[in-house]
Amino acid sequence: MTFDSTPDPRRLSLSPLTPTDLELVFHVFSDPDTWQHLPVGRHQTRAESKTIIDASMSSMRKHKIGQWAVRVAEQGADDALATGTFIGTGGVNMTPALVWNLGYRLSPAAWGRGFATEIALAAVAAARINNDSVPITARVLSNNPASARVAVRAGLRKVWEGPTSTGAAAGSTRQIFSDRDLGRDALRRLIEAG
Image 1 (cartoon, rainbow, N blue to C red):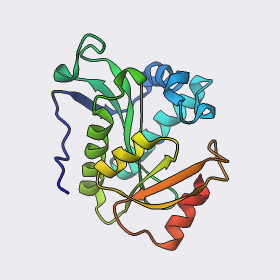
Image 2: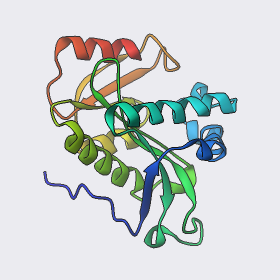
Image 3: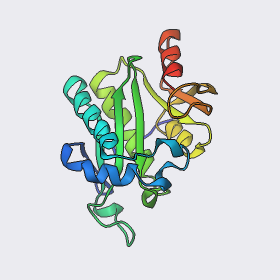
């Protein structure tokens, strides 16, 4: 499959997360509707949202890539989402398993518009430009088929599915997607991370 890996700059604006985004990140991450597939992941405090920003800023310093603040650009706007509206975060971070992890969290008002796929394609392209020797992965709860479809559209394939025993998703079934075969150690570490 061939994908255009560049988001339409007329639909989305992607910029590195900064501390000035804290209230916006908290607004999205504290919304219970945002967490339909993992209710226990909902942020209760701004300190939880600050960890997202801090991790992204650290990733940007160490790896030149991290999570982006995602805003609606001119061609993505409509009556429900005005130009400049912050709709969430997305990008890749380096994991302790030494693989890129693709992730995004969007406000439900942005769902169903193809934005998640555009973010995923941009993140995969950025990770490949940054360091193509590092596998790109995504961890998706099995009860979230829309996110699994986004991973596939971004060029990843399912390499594992099974129960999650740690983290906020303990007791759930999770799928791991990757753009290539993972070594046993990397796969084990991703599974253990939850």
